Length: 219
Image: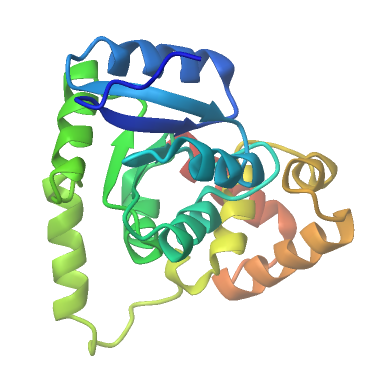
């Protein structure tokens, strides 16, 4: 195995889509100061790979093969506090950015961003900075300043990370059985989460919940 170049900062990619991993790796490896030291499609092998390859940063998709990207970000922060994490996702930053920040992520890159934005984000995070869009940072500051204001009504903030993940998967039109398989949980557990989501968000039935989730997913 080729010895890593000590002059390059090492990036690991965690995404369950091989083509995305390959494309992102090509973008990163084309830079003179960066290299990809490994890829993984799920949280458990990713944690083992971090121990082996000792990356400077890990780029994480929120939807992994059988686990949650948010939980992986937390686990990396707890076990490897010097390793920085960056989200690379198709999910709307306005929905997930604050949660990923609380989980320990230092940046949020949308998959639609061009290569130069991706590289800029990686370098900023490696240099100890944060990379979130200006609008998201403004929203977070505004929310903090309005922390004691009366809420206008139930929003997605009332959902747990797992519930938000399931709500998003419902929006992508996956059945309970497919969601259960993806998250490695039982169908009954998915159905229980779905019912909790329905109650928390104030929908009168499951069909209303599905329409709202699909509308959000396609926005």
